[in-house]
Length: 322
Image 1 (cartoon, rainbow, N blue to C red):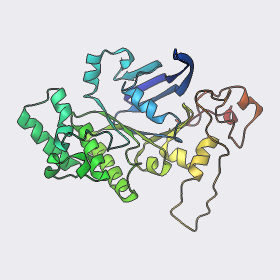
Image 2: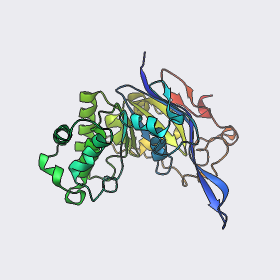
Image 3: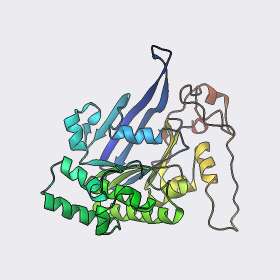
Image 4: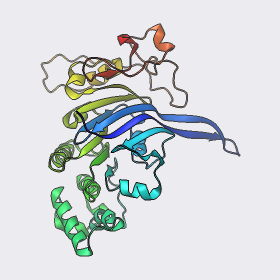
């Protein structure tokens, strides 16, 4: 039986839109709109989708860095959506985040050693000597030298900054890490190093990840299961091999067709998607993908499909499989 570390039920995150001198509430940006899934202990759930689909908002809402509008976030069988600030402080020891932009996530006035050790100080972990030893250990673990502890962020390369972000997330021995596009701002050669590091750390420390990315090739390297997100909703969720070899949703099929094949002699057919992603302020009725879907049917314009289980643990939200 799968041991669930985190479970999300019907989670929503709306951002209010205001207008006029009185800042009247006129609409909502529905960044996350009714999302449900779980993450098992020690597994990596990949979350993929186009820019603006709500991936980062979902990741931040999971850790209560942004307050969810509604729904439940259950961590170790505890509903954390109503936890107080003091309870959330305890959660931070269990769940951490690696941010997309390593430059803006680091305080330019703090040394690398202080940035990594800040969480230890906040949570009162160890003596000053023990904290310094822990920082040195973390630097070595992520592939940095001890001398980096006295440097400032502007003195580091992009890859070194992201390694610092990973070390900072590991400082308090978490069990869950939300990695928000941790390699999207890095060169391809550095991306491979960071992905290998993330995979090695998971194996050594039994970490669970929510790995957010817009690149299916990257997601496929690190994930056990993959959730595909479109306009605030999950449209398909399956094991990595199932998703790559038998994608069911037309949106997933289009995303996979954009992944370049390593063999130049293998036939490659791109499935272009017409138009742009609709506005999350006023999403289409029925299936939100129907405005761009090459296989749209009349029912798609009227009824929203439910995410339901087909063969095995393959879930899809599409009227093609009703």
